[in-house]
Length: 313
Length: 300
Image (tube, rainbow over all chains, first blue to last red; front, side, top):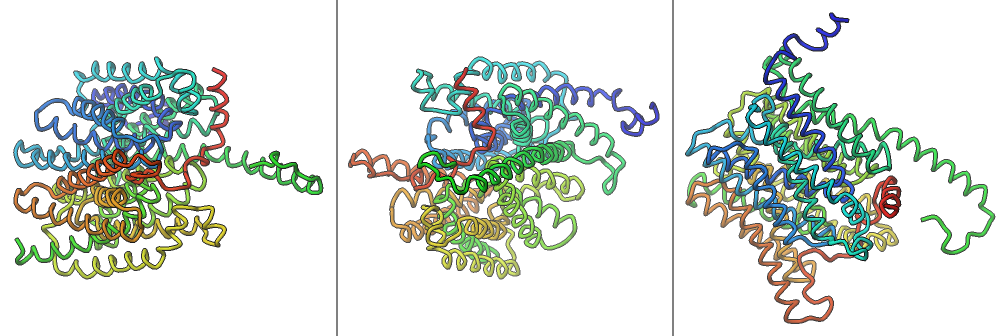
């Protein structure tokens, strides 16, 4: 058993301080992303989540310029962008996507400029890669309280507005009829998403952080139709992907071709995708069985006239 | 500014802008912003892989963007489209990150793939870009009527024998091709601003499809030219100017639509900015689980 363990886990894994910090911070972030991401998926705001992640690159690059932790930049710019999206956002999905894309484009344009200044003026050449692809092993212990605070903020927002948010996510009209301030609820949700994405940008990188937000949440929704349970699944799946990703990255240190370790973010993203693909199988089988059953029923009842309005859509 | 190596830049940038204007018109019409955003970013993995294997970047881009577009189409038919798009995108970006970690490429070259580099276009690169661009524009113009019909009224298109699924595949392939042409110039992260800002603005200014497309091309060309001129003068990255001018176009379109609506408050007047267009694709496409969600939340 001990031998097997040392084969799966390269020696020194649990003794390494950066790994321990990565496990703690990455785990917390994965749980937050799973919970908040569930709402992004129910509301069909995958694109908003992705755009907020991209825009947070702007904040990350600006923070290198003024010399603060990238996390502050991610969060600051993310929340501002969420506000702008809400301001110019249009309620119908198409217009919303366009507005989202425009904010994202403008934000990335600024990011290009800031990164250019990073490399020319302040001479921080590694900034681009750190911001875009993450740096989970360079998390310093001083940032942990901030991570905890932001995590509490993100989860706190969705917990505080859980019921109105859920109702307005599935039916805006019904929520409005019940007197829920739909727009405020939407804005708060977008802010929670931007906080979650910022946290995940710190661990697996800004342009990949959508993976932790959307992947586990979509997988959770495939496994159950109960919102609360789906969030628990999402948090667990995100946690599993992150921890396994960190472990594999540690193990891959001597793997070919480069022999300096494969990136953590690659493993996390790949695992999230594998979980999603695996989770879709039971759903597909169920659907096929249901289709076969209803097909048989239709064949059986083919002679019975179907009253208008009772046909199945 | 117009001499020597800059002549290539102007030629390539103009081709790119025309392609972006034509293809972008349909992206805005179909509300396919997320797909149009994901394909170029996914294609970045192809460029990174090509540089690792030492083959032509354009080939890597074409393969990766086609693979990305087709898998979005394939996965999207089996689940929620936005989730499928997001996951395809991050998987390809993850591969890109992996390839980058293997290669010994310097950061500035990666940055130029992501944020664009117009000043380094060589004469040998113009021919493939021109051929690909011509292919893209021709395909779009040949498919113009069925694609327009399938984008605006999918039901009517089906009745007329135009398969909207096949049209979607064609559309995705065209987007992929356009991406491979435009990516080296404007960069993976910013093609999208060029493909969406000018066409969205054009649609607010006119309701006629052909005019809107022409205007969209004109605005895109103007955007790219202004961006290159500004970039040449300031030495700032061209992506910054494309992003901000693209957003400016959209803002102008929104402003125009609002002004027209205020002046002429008839319903339907001043609808602009691409938010109209019949056939809400998204509405009926929720996963099976969502009915349970709806019921659950109503009970609460």
